[in-house]
Image (cartoon, rainbow, N blue to C red; front, side, top):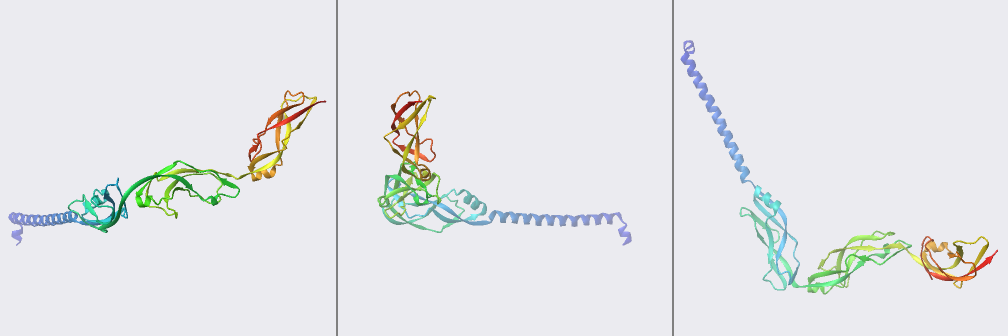
Length: 323
């Protein structure tokens, strides 16, 4: 045996044997790895996915003649198939869910929901296979808009002015039976209580029947701007006039005034009127050197809280006295 191991040929034979064993081992591992990779790839490519999405429901109908009610805006559809294709379809929604009403007359109908545009590799199911709809003749009419505002929200001591709307009228479109019920169209203004400032907001427009119920119609436009002035409440009060000399006067001359208008009516806030008992009226005596009668303007511009006076002019007799 020792002689055999020392032989050069025996060593060459042993080396060849080891090489053959190593080659067989490496080839076996490579084959196993390739098989595992192929199987994984095959599993990935053939894996399925199921997803449920909400798709808008389209109606095939002559919308210029008919108005349809009762149908859902969206229908849930479950699609199943290759995972990548399902994901793409769910993201893009490049298909449509629809109901064909083109051959139907006015009245109530049960209509089948259909799907178009789905890839043939996908299967689907609908949560609602039929819809129940009501087809009626279409009508469009114009109505004036008024502001719907809770005046009780105005704070004590304040009052509401006339509302101003950005849109004077609105087009109401719907089934004849619904449009014929319209009693008024309002722009709904929502405010907080104890209101002391003017309101300026965008308001939703609603069509209401005689009972104040919202009707199922389409409004164009559906919103409008609304401005409601809120200011301190005013009232009126009669007060005496207080005639005072103004203008350029001579140092050696004095003036006295009289008028047949003993009082004037002033308009202002309650708080301002509570403080005033007489209204100052300036009488310009510049250049007056003898007794005369002038028409004098009456104004509230210098008085806080007062907004108007009546009359706005009075006749004043100016008596001149030289000292």
